[in-house]
Amino acid sequence: MMSATSPIVAALTARVVFAMPLYGGIVASTLLTMAGGLVIVVMGNGGTAEFRGGEGLVILATVSWTWYSQAAQRWLAGYSQLHITGLTVMTGSVALVVLATLAHVTGLYETRFDLTPASLAMVLYLGVIPIGIGAWLWMFAVSRLGVTVASIYHNFVPVSAVLVATVAFGAVPTVYHLIGGVIILAGVVYSQVRSHAEKRNA
Image (cartoon, one colour):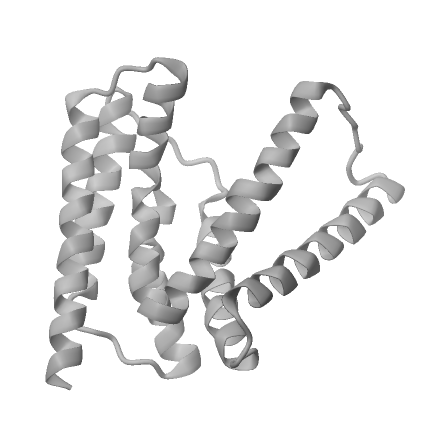
């Protein structure tokens, strides 16, 4: 639910940090995609939602990732998006290993290793698909669409989750999942139409 705010958070971050203009459709498209996400997450789960205190971290993560995504395009101008992605993943991996090691050594966190084939397969999948290919596609999208418009597509995550659950685990989507997906799609389409219209008139 909190990640549904990513378009407006990304737009404000880009505006404040990089002085990038806000296009006219950002508020309406964000409200639409947020509404669709709420329909899927809340109504699709029986009308219940629960806040547990980590919501601020989601917003902070969105601000950080927005800043980095735009800054990387400027710092590494002339590099391919695959190169930028490689540097991003490599730096993040090294930082994560260092932090995990420090947390384990200081006793802040107990490190456990599961070397079963199933766990190793999941680690391989996560490293290659969501992190590797996903980060590359994200950087490519930011370079073409800008970080604000690209962030709107984050709100397809609930739709993707429902599709994966349906295909992989046999879950049956409810009418709320379908309605929410249509509302999110409307928000994305609206943002694209307004963005292209403003670029033509500029």
